[in-house]
Each structure stands twice: as structure tokens, then as C-alpha cells.
Length: 241
Image (cartoon, rainbow, N blue to C red; front, top):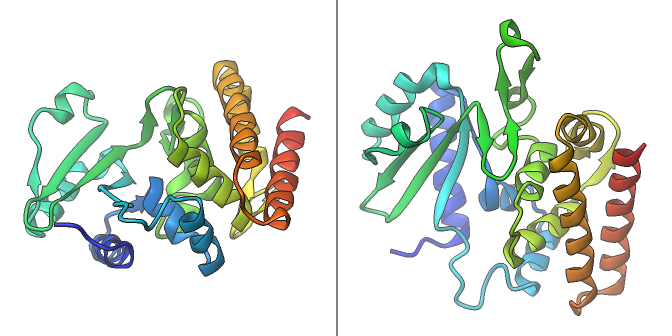
């Protein structure tokens, strides 16, 4: 069963709101979060860059971030909403990831607990008793913060076209800042994370260059390209200084 973008986002918002009402923190990640943060003009850009439309299924599942300390409540919540828990995922990921499947509507919810850890780590929560104090899920709603969303995309080593589009669309729709501001990308936090992981810095900078190269070969409006490149350059400038 294919679910249209607007309906999928409505379902995601309803789940996050219902969880919030029960004191459970969930924040959308990935393509759904990019769409949530996109203005009508940015959504048109997603379509013109063939991320949406033309018989493409934009969302195959819903990625969310949550707290490992709430895992019992999270499991109970999704089961009560008609989802089935996928067995074995928690064991394979040492309790840092859970998957719940809605077989009726045909999609899964992939829950990343405290951090995303694929090619590079993107932490959402760290207990101050174990060093760095971190609680990134309080910054935005109903998604992870824009800086964390950028980090999620930039950590991918073998990055694909969809992720390059998403990064460019995030840059199109949001100004760059050197501190936390609503609806702006906090480049200083990206620098902070990359200062702690030079491998991530290298791969992230390489991916920013790939987004520029991809943008160059598209036929979108030159003013759009100039705006995206200006913001990418500002992000790079803050990260490097």
C-alpha cells in the first residue's frame, strides 16, 4: 500500500504527538524530517530534482530518534497502536535500535535510541555521568534539530543522489548560524562534532563537495543554486575556523 507524502507526514506527526502526550520523546529523522522542514517552494525543489513525484515512493519507512531510557514505554506505545515488533534487531544493534512494523499500512518505524551509528556516530543523548552532557532531542519538534539532520546525511560514506538532494534542499530552505537558532542550521555544532571525529570531518567535507558537484549539473534556477552555494560556503567557513 503506497502512502502519499502528505498522508505519511500526517501519520508521522500523529504518532509523535500521541507519544508526546504519554511523555515519550520521539523525533522524526531522515527524508520525512527534511520534508517536514521544507516550505512549499522547497517541496517544489524536491520534485524538480526528482526526489518526489514521477511515480516515486518518497517514504518507505519512518526513522525516529528516542531515548533508550524509555524503551519499555516505546514498545508498549507502538504495540498499542497496532505495530508489531521486528525480532532480533535490538539484539543485533546492542539495544540501540528497534523496528516496529505496521503491516496494514505497509511501513516500518525504525527507532534509533540515543544515537545514530552507521558510518559515523551522531549522538542525541549522553549521560553527563559518563563525560559529555548532551540532550539534542529537546531542541526541535517534531524532528531532530537541523544540525543533527545535516549530520545524519553527511555521515554517509557511499552517499546517493537522494541524500545529495536532501542536503541541498536543507541548505536552500535554511540560513546558516554559528549558534542554536530556530529554523537555522547550527554550523558551530557541526564543527563541534567534527572536531571530535576527524574521519567524520573528512567524509562530511567530501560530501559537501559532492552536493556542490551534483547541484552544478542540475537545471534548477541559477538564483536557487547561488543561494544554496552561498549557504554551503558559509557552513564550510564556520567549520574550518
